[in-house]
Amino acid sequence: MSDTHARRPNLYKAWPAGYNAISAMEAAVAESGLDQLLIELVKTRCSQINGCAYCIDMHTKDARARGETEQRLYGLSAWRETPYFSEKERAALALAEAVTLVSETHIPDDVFNEALHHFGEEDLAKVMMLIVTINGWNRLALASRTPVGGYISRFGQHATVAAGG
Image 1 (cartoon, rainbow, N blue to C red):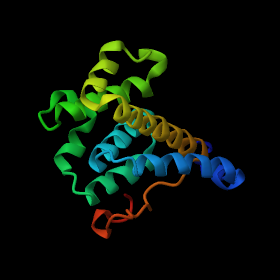
Image 2: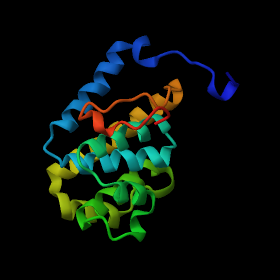
Image 3: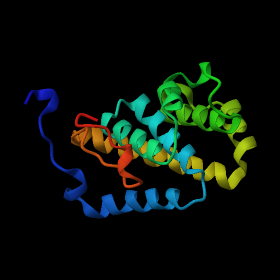
């Protein structure tokens, strides 16, 4: 195993209270009433930006299991150039990118206000918590070098692709 893929400690097991805290935030987002496909799109897009292969694998499988189309998943990294996403989804994706790249963007007012327009205050707070949570998971998975490819969607077996992701 090369240095770039050397095993690292399992941070989730090393501090269960921390894992439980981020898991509780994840559960709150999942149960928030946000559209489940929107949740998976945002999680996938943030994971693409962060280069988190484990989370990309997980959330594309979960998205497919929930009924997302291959076309939208393939076009997600270039969502601005496609006709596949609603204005509400576009607002969420723009916000996801701005928050994920916060050191570069500082979350522009126009991006924030467009999301507020489509979601309202409460749902905007839910989308923000979604973005914060997936960015946390991405950083934990990357730091831990969580093995990629073996995830099986809990939303249906048909979402799993043959070995290798």
